Image 1: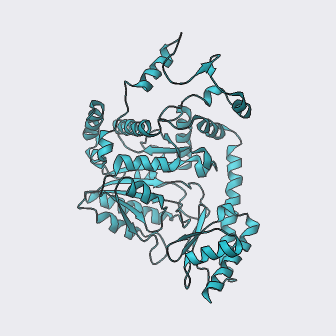
Image 2: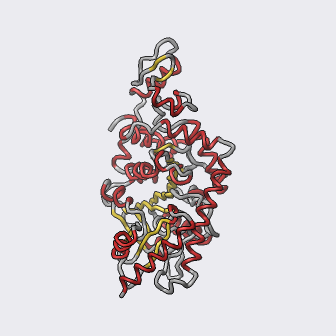
Image 3: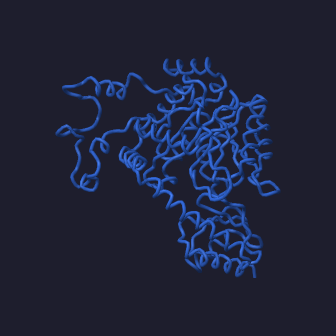
Length: 431
């Protein structure tokens, strides 16, 4: 094992041996090289005042070399904020601004000890880093039975982890914290579990209420007290899009200091929060009361980034940073939030109006981009195909009964036509 990796591991063992035990085999071996090209280039950037012949970019006239046909479309930005490599952990100012944004939007974090967000190539990349660092073959990844299918690829296929599902809703159609509790305690023999909490949930658009949130935290604490090391990951892809009286903060804050055996990890990003899906700018944040633990986890995360994508795209980080600093940002974001909320409310109004009888029952939703119908008497796949072939309407079939509808991409005035068409499809296929 590389001496740098050994040193990082020894620090973890001393500061929090439980976090060291959570690491995968790859997580124990990975490190960020301190004597490679990047570190030497960083040193040269501060000391090489005459010539800097280190890193592999081209310069001209004291600026990164660039093509006019590209820069003409980006002339509001300085070439140094576009063409140079971004640091592996991301633009420092962007990390600082995003951290301040997290605290503002999550008052629970005030006074808590957590690291500087590390920039990822959007949320999937952040989750992939978590999988690499903490998931080994056979490790349990605990998720609800209504989940984003990419978890299976990221944790199951790539890392060989065992996906353990529990029902998302209980009999009262609230979050099934007891199901989560049982799934976690079932891992006592393994002594380790990775739990992924995705709110607002994809595909259902559900976010628990405050009492449910406390029950989730209590379940994770109980698992830790039973001797289980828990990597508690909050997948906050749709954070902020809370339309009703649900939790309006990430559970990352509550989980950040509940037990030494719990490592809270927050995965979020500008992707959906700021409506910049193609920019691929996400963040990965760790919580710990030890600065040394936070430093080790950052070094290992940077090692994974260096070994895979080297660093994230610089232009999109610059675009997001400038947007976050703009005095118009909050007002423009609020405007888009209102549009999304009106669409969600209109969907609920239509489904609760009685015009569809009992043909379009749905799972509780109160946030995010999506909602799910719970069909009976006809399969979701049949309805999906019928909608495509007869109406030119696209939806997502999940299993036998669930049809996911993304109201996020349907104008409010078209929602009634959409659900009328779904109703007609169900009626036709049920005959």
